[in-house]
Length: 87
Image 1 (cartoon, rainbow, N blue to C red):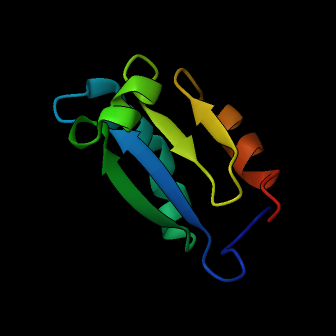
Image 2: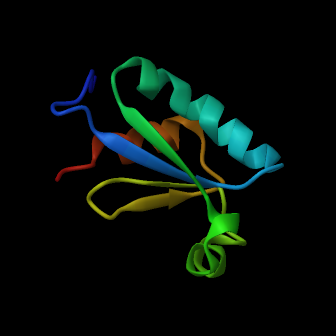
Image 3: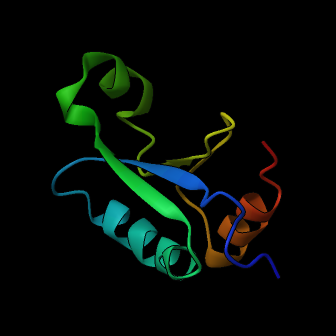
């Protein structure tokens, strides 16, 4: 299993206030945070470009390598996506 990542890999969660699906995505990310992954939460409502890009897709998790996984995703799908990240 992929344990704590080398260099403490940083994931980004695109979210906004009042997004109940974003809370579910955050819960699925919690085990990865406990393994040493970092997480930056970005509120798309504060940026017009992000709102245009992600407004109907959030929650979206992005890797520092440029890959993304958008909702809906399961814990298993998230795990598979995280494990394939190679920067």
